Amino acid sequence: MKRNLTFVCAAAALCVLAGCSREPEPVKVLYWNIQNGMWSDQGSNYDNFVEFVKAEDPDICIWAEAESRYRTDTADKMKGCEEQYLPYNWDLLARRYGHKYVCLAGKHDTFPQVVTSKYPVTTLERINGNGKDTVVVHGAGYVQADINGEIINIVTVHTYPQKYAYLAEDKEKSAAENGGDIFRAAEMKYICGNTILKYDPEGKDRWMMVGDFNAISRIDNPYLGRPDDDKAFLLHDYVRSETPYIDIVGHFYPEEYQPSTFSGRRVDYVYVTEPLLKDITSVRTITDGFATASRDSRGLSNFCHPSDHYPIEFTMKTGD
Image 1 (cartoon, rainbow, N blue to C red):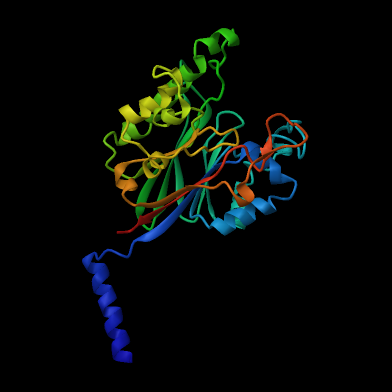
Image 2 (image 1 turned 45 degrees about the horizontal axis):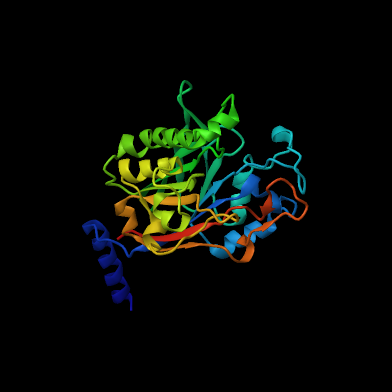
């Protein structure tokens, strides 16, 4: 028995020295716009939210709208950090579902993105615009995850949501001229220009760009019936034609429309490069259980429980 154990240990050591590849390791990623910092569950100490995440058991989470904004069960805005639990305590909340690494990825206003992970993550850049002619209203982030020595590049986004352009003086006129669509496309061009197109324009490495894009894609037009020249397609037309990214929901469900919001729109996307796409084994939009969306019965603005968006979850293999 002792000789056999010695042989196994020696063989393992030789394998490491020889650079043997390890078995592919599944890594689950969960993205969700949690609407106003999971306002729906903050009054319950986030217990239901934590149980949902623990049950899904993701290795990496990407949260949009990751900041507390309103007092519990009201539409009254909180007064700064003295009242807000998030984003300042994401480290404490993440530990409750088993994540010890946290990155505040992008924050320009009160709608930041946060990445939490079982694996080490590092924020490389917070993208807010150039301070001149381009503003990234909700901010964006460039984060790297180190999965046992394998680097995954993560870009988080949450683009401007309105029909009119940011800071438009005449909002009605701007909306009629598709000001919001044009502004969002400019945001996306700036984000991509400062991330993947800057560091890996051919998409040779493993990248993902994930978030609430607040825009529709031309690939869904068989279900939407919009005019071909609709400016609502500008943002995704740019991503699909000028970057190496591939829409994984569209790739895995080519004959289906997969809405990502309570209103029935698909505005949440996961884009990846080809080297990452080939390692993705499953993708799903979660619309049941805790994630089942319903409108707040008191008519508080557009609030939903637990969110007006659905989570998107995907699994990829690493280490092969």
